[in-house]
Length: 248
Ligand SMILES: NC(=O)c1ccc[n+]([C@@H]2O[C@H](COP(=O)([O-])OP(=O)(O)OC[C@H]3O[C@@H](n4cnc5c(N)ncnc54)[C@H](OP(=O)(O)O)[C@@H]3O)[C@@H](O)[C@H]2O)c1
Image 1: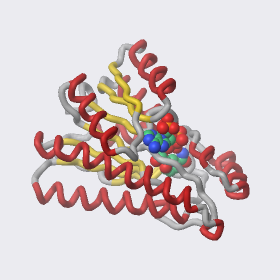
Image 2 (image 1 turned 90 degrees about the horizontal axis):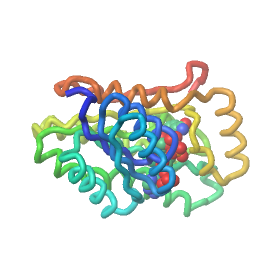
Image 3 (image 1 turned 180 degrees about the vertical axis):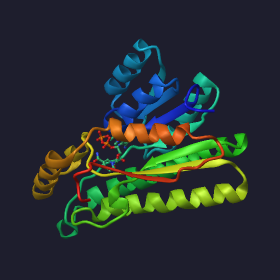
């Protein structure tokens, strides 16, 4: 089954990569289930998808809350009868030098970027195991592939997601559950992500770099759609995607 009629849960759907991916998948016939904290954004997005003839529902959720993750899976099942894909995409990037000791931000990144993905897996794996099919897509980052100053904790969460996803792929193959995985590693993509940086110097540096290189989130959405569109017996595991001109 290609994208048409697939039920796709998307976390972090209220802006950026998640929002644009929801629009694209809905335009290709997917039934999308949108999750994030900002209700107004989710409502507007769901309405605009419906106006275009697509199918979308939403739930206000915080990915750090395990129950919220279970509730969005329930919502998808109640509205559309099943879940085919979960795109665990919510994240934040308050980068800073480790020596600044912004430990509250470290905790937040671990809670959202890593524990948020684990909460999503806890909610969805029983469904995917039972139906013996399913697709887990996550947004890691090029920061999950290589180290850079200021990105110590952000990168650590994204490296962790990379490892988790590879283990999930191997275990799913061994267990015969047919669960597919795709991990996306974006470079500089124009979204609201930089707004989470509180360290002034890091913020200025990141903004300059993004102003020079950034490309739109639709480019990432295309890659997510490609992964989902593959035949069920085919797993495209990893994609790095970024501006041609950026030497990431
Ligand atoms: N933009 C880039 O250059 C880039 C590069 C590599 C990787 N990424 C990754 O791409 C993913 C999407 O980010 P983006 O670039 O599209 O930035 P964005 O526009 O800031 O989107 C982040 C999304 O995550 C959601 N979110 C944050 N905390 C949440 C929480 N506790 N519970 C539920 N949702 C939460 C936000 O929604 P609410 O605030 O409404 O909750 C928002 O929808 C992130 O994982 C990010 O690390 C981005």
